[in-house]
Length: 206
Image 1 (cartoon, one colour):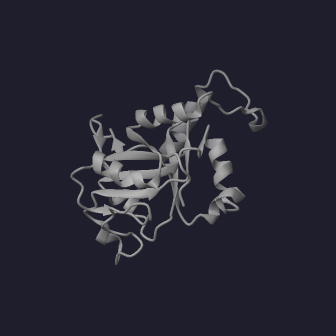
Image 2: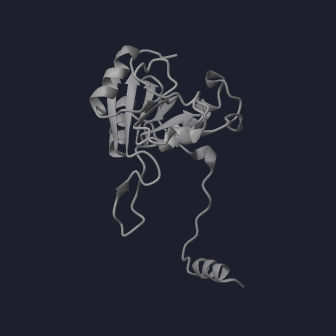
Image 3: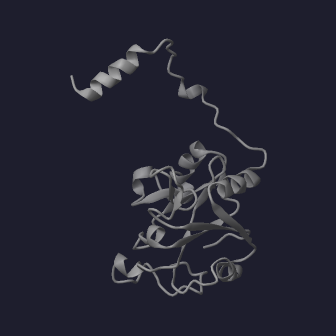
């Protein structure tokens, strides 16, 4: 018997009480009275900065306000006029190295954990991770209560996908990159962006 199996067997032997596996049919996911307020609170707790924009014309101003020293801004969103790089037209992903701000589209937000769903809507998805700072633009009305609702929605006809595998790539992102694995010291930007800003749009965006 391997060391791994020995450890597992010891754990099993030490169990004093056993419970039946819960039925998924009895599962009642959490719902919130104020879904927007909960989402913003959870997103901020995860380290995000949240802004509200009444129209797409306000996006550039928000980026300039939050990241005044940014010189290289990468985005393929037509609303982002201040972009200096387009992840759809760069030669390769390495060309995005040195990006100060990456501006991407998020399709929905999840109130229970403050995360946003970001499918690959650009040729070089590395912009989501190589950028020093990330700005995610999302319609304010596209917020769901929990991950159960989120998975049901992203595989619905509303988003144009029949199943989860139909996405070439997608990720739930909650706040900037951070880790405390080493010496229990919190480090931001260890694997990806140092900061994340969410822009919630009052208007529907294309």
